Amino acid sequence: MEFKTLVYQFIYLATGCLSTMITQYLFYAGAAEKKTYLTVLAQYFAMTLSVFIPVNDNSKKAKVSFFAKPAHIKKNIIIISLIDIFANVISTFGMFLIGSGIYQVIHSAIVVFTAILSRIFLNKKFTIQQWFSLIVITSGLSLSAIGGRSNATGVMGTIGIAITIFGTICYAIIYVLNERILKHEDGPTATQHSVWVGTCSASITFVYILFFVFPKLDMRKSMMNAPLYPNSPMINIILAYVSLVLSHFLHSYTYFVLLGKSGAVTTGVINSIRAVSVFFLSSALYCRDDVSQCFTRPKVASCVVVVVGILLYSVFSSKAQQQQQLKNKKKE
Image (tube, rainbow, N blue to C red; front, top):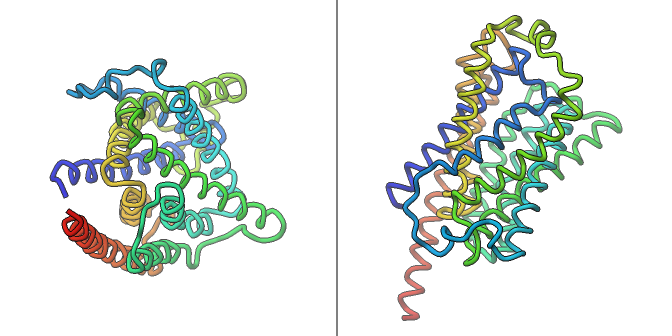
């Protein structure tokens, strides 16, 4: 693996963890209620900032603007944006219905869903050992929910579970669609894709917030009734949102680069590392104020199993790659 790719993976992982921590702070300070979608807008706006990245790319892809791209590429960009927004909305609603514990169990299956969809639509082949590793990772993430509170009972609980499964599949579809379009000969570069999807998604989200959220938004009241940090200084909130945008900017750019270099499944595995890293960081930063963020035995077990699964996936993937290279040499 190239050193440059490792750097991208580290930045993607680090900024993913940082974004989660900042979002949690804003929620605790009453400045990021889920229904307002302000943090979602910050995420999409950050994607558009990739336009300022100086890239020395003289390829044909980089020289073609969005409007000059083939119709099917422009159509796919819009579809990806709509699915992304839809997945965000229904996943948030699903978590509200069933609680974060069961949500984590279901959402952890995204690695397996991504692998299945990659096999179907990208014709990727995985060894039995790789499939086993992905199941181990998913099982490890699921362990974190043991002992947690759940609202997944009754009719609404069943609806919440169904919605969350569908939302997880939507996220897996986004991973695969993004990888496919980035590797298409007429597709965009990583920078272009980040800017175009971000612009489309941010525009739709902004219109929604402008007409349906802003007229009812009372930020002062929300901050006064904050879950943990009421009446936080406004300068702290502003700095937090600026930091969130900058973090998402680096995260989204490296995300599209990695999809083109490493693929959707490997990027999904990195997100699993992010999940266990968030356990440690949340406990260190917020355990004192929120008991649910504290490190527990199930979370320790989850971390161990996930790390084992990731190591197995790395080893088996390396072996599979070596075997493929040998086959290619024999054909030559």
